[in-house]
Image 1 (cartoon, one colour):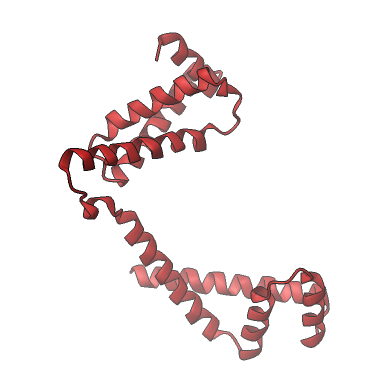
Image 2 (image 1 turned 90 degrees about the vertical axis):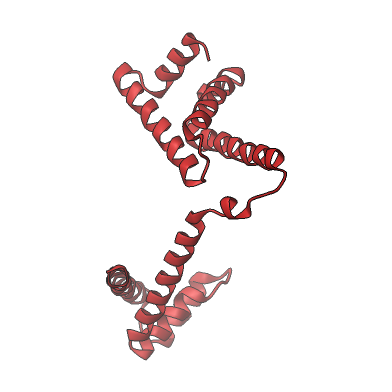
Length: 187
């Protein structure tokens, strides 16, 4: 990228030169972290490739008009990461699947499992009628949801506003219970 392109890119990030520099550095750090999490050893080099490509694309396609550039830039990062692993496979001749499987996946999977188990436990702690009402309220998928919920309110002897209020309170109780359960599981 040329100095002029960089200057315009920074100006686009923020009109204040100091703030623009900070935003650029934050973006750079986020990209480095992105590559580190995906186990790409040359994370800084790949980050430079992404930023150069992003600046070129912004000026070539007049993308400075984009209001949300981060998804676009991280899309470029995904492509750079994919190309990096494709090249590694070609160089080595064999794919190292252990390196390609992201450790983030395992952590995310454990988090979802822990959260699901906490949700089930917290639902079991509710009174039978509250649990049944909660599940009926949220698990029903229909085009006539308003009519369904109005019928549900009548079935449980509530007004529609009473039903909404009850659901709000149950959600809060479940949210607190799940938060407490997750904290206990991490300790």
